[in-house]
Length: 254
Image (cartoon, rainbow, N blue to C red; front, side, top):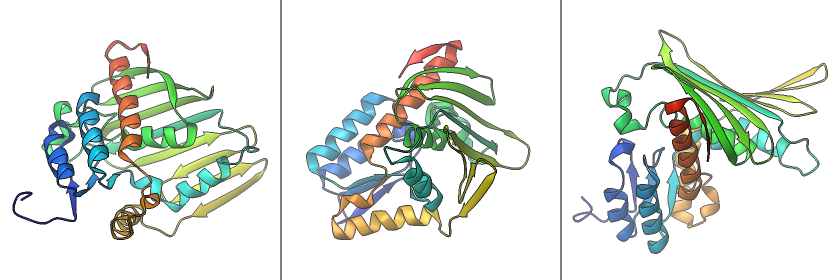
């Protein structure tokens, strides 16, 4: 396909365990890339792709749909001012039924729960809390939980599972000295003293993510992209650290 067609952009939606060659080949041809997360299952592959993207100057966006949600933008703006109370504790849970695709159950192709179902949790943790210094992780066959220490001094607790027989539970919370914030996909609930406010976004985050990529492709303005390959590599690094920590229920550096 790459040899026989003149492409403007290419979506990479293969299992992350087979990433690398196609992205590099497309980048060498100057083709813009949208790459589903996680971008790879090891840093060596990710660094090779990142080098090809940088060397050839191609536009690249990584799948992190919740970065485009109105509820996410609202919480970012609340936490952004220097005068705002910084996060003290971040917590999240991503609880789902088992995925339907057989390859989604193969850790050699997905990287395991943290890099598959839990990737969005890790990305939100970095987005709202900053970079992570060290992690402790505990794992069973169908569930994982972790404690995070951010470079800012904040602490985090994340849990992910695909063991539910039915239902879905996705929530991320941020506690500061002045407020509690509960992010639930298209909704943001904020509690201050005895007052509670609820913001409901009127958007489709997945659509907005793709629309931003197309706009950037047409205009050349990369500011539209909220999840670059470099950002995705940082989230990948966090997921790999959690995998290492979970092997021995221990604490490791990120």
